[in-house]
Length: 106
Image (cartoon, rainbow, N blue to C red):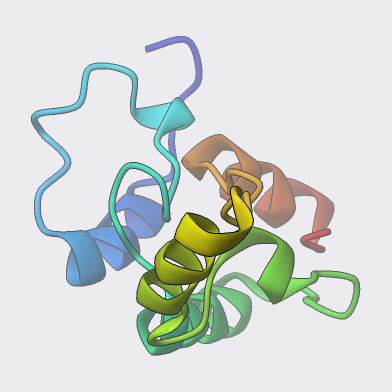
């Protein structure tokens, strides 16, 4: 692994996703796209992350990265009729690690 990932960060993510041992490229794992963390779980995880690592979330736009509870289904259904589903930016473990270093997530 190129970058030493903070073990406490991995433990926090594993509370919501289970073991990450099956992934070979841990730093590039996306919380929503790879681990299916979204909605209330994503909100709770990020709240704990902010508190645990003293990271400011003031500039972070949750809805750019995660659907709300139920939105992943309604977005798919809407996409069937409109032709496209909303795309979400990946929030990776490396992105979270950088947030710890910079003391802000944006």
